[in-house]
Amino acid sequence: MTTPRRSARRSAALAVVVALLVGPFVAWQGAQGGQSQAVSVIAPDGIVVVGDSISARYDDDPGSADQAWWSVTGRRFDAHVRTYAQSGSGYLRPGQRCTGNRFIDRPDAYTGPAPSILIVEGGRNDWARCVDGGFVPSTDAEVRHAVDTYLDVLTTYLPRSTRIVVLGPPWGPLDRADGVRVTRVIADEARAHGLQFVSTHGALTADRVIDGIHPNRDGSLAIARRVIRALEKPALPR
Image (cartoon, rainbow, N blue to C red; front, side, top):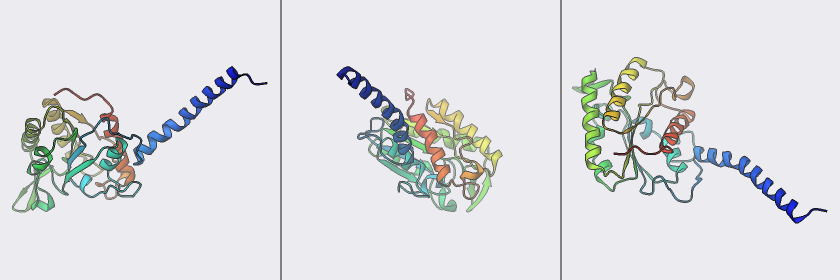
């Protein structure tokens, strides 16, 4: 005969087992693009992403081969994401093979409705600057000036309630030396401005890119995991 007390203990134990089994699955579904929260606690006013082709070439289609890292991140926190991204662009370099614009040339990202979070993804293209429509290797000083100027603009125009996150340029196997120097400059400037810097070092391994530069689905997921972990930490005071 089963007593009510014993039955209650069994029900409680079963609930614990189910939670242990289902909890990690729900979290992973979130990392894949499934929504795990009904209301965004972290980003009630949404997320803005400023970036290059690592953001611009990809979509918001959950589970697709081209789902963007920002899409996975936004869906993990059930947050609306607005992107201001252009292939070939950076802090220093205009996109679209020198005919487009730089991060700082997209004022809607920092003068429109203030988001809860603004993420800057880029720097991969800043190994060079544009001269007469062509690429000329940039100096560290040129990159530093461009990054410093842009971060100054963000901290001036955006309210303190907006969490600004500077993502280290996701760098694949190509041009490692430029990756080290550009990333170092961006990290230094982010910290000098009191902003959160998120490293992507090692995220884009050779099996996570399609051309040595741009991520495949595994690469986008690897970037998203870095960002998700960073956003789950307390924000730095500004």
